[in-house]
Amino acid sequence: MKTRKRKTKITVTPAIAGKRGWVFCLLGALLITIAIPARAQCTAENTAFQSGEHVMYDLYFNWKFIWKKVGLASLTTFSTTYQSQPAYRFNLLSVGSKKTDFFFKMRDTLTCYVTEKLEPLYFRKAAEEGDRYTVDEAWFSYKDGLSHVKQKRTWRDHPPQEMEYSDTRCIFDMLSILAQARSYNPDDYKVGDRIMFPMATGRRVEEQTLIYRGKEEVKANNDTIYRCLVFSFVEYKKGKEKEVITFFISDDKNHLPIRLDMYLNFGSAKAFLKSVRDNRYPMTSVVGKK
Image 1 (cartoon, helix red, strand yellow):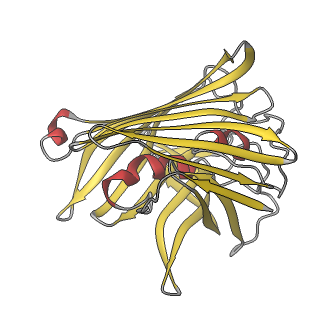
Image 2 (image 1 turned 180 degrees about the vertical axis):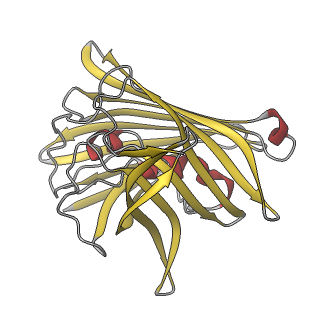
């Protein structure tokens, strides 16, 4: 059973398209261990992260066969409270360098709160990208066996857009879904397996598709080589499959993204792990230095 109520007619551009793909790509990498059961019960046990974890990434873009560093991204996790109840808070900050501001300014800040059992509570994304500034918010609730989400997008110079969505399955935002995804065990995956999951993107809830490709050794920006699980994020247009992102994820209990190869509408881009501290488990996926 699904119910949907919209207050404004909305035309949606895929989140991966154009320059707005940066944050989506980083978050997508953190989702790839997901195999969410079809249930409205959205709680789960955290077996992957701890309060204080801090991850940094270097962002690169390809200009005419030359790779240029264009910015940094950081992901942090903290224990906190939300409406007087124990919770986790996740923050993702993506910032372009001053040199690239001349071509395209990027300042994205994402925050979300989940319960200690990883149940989504609240999500906010403030994005300054080029000459556009938007704020997305989502409020989650649970009643009569259904998950409900209310979403609102506020523009700098346009009326706000709102929508509501209900589903018998769990509904997640970009950050809360990673909290659960990282705790799932991918050992049962077989090459070619397809993983489907729903995600609130600010103005609607969309189904996403990932394909497991196998394992590979890759180098990060800390001169370390990691054994990684490889996944492809794909889109379907006119019946044809198009690869949008290739994810390389640490093959250990942390399930951290090590490298992302992104095939965007405006060119190609990459993100490399730069550093991680206060991770819950040793990085047993390390196979050597280079």
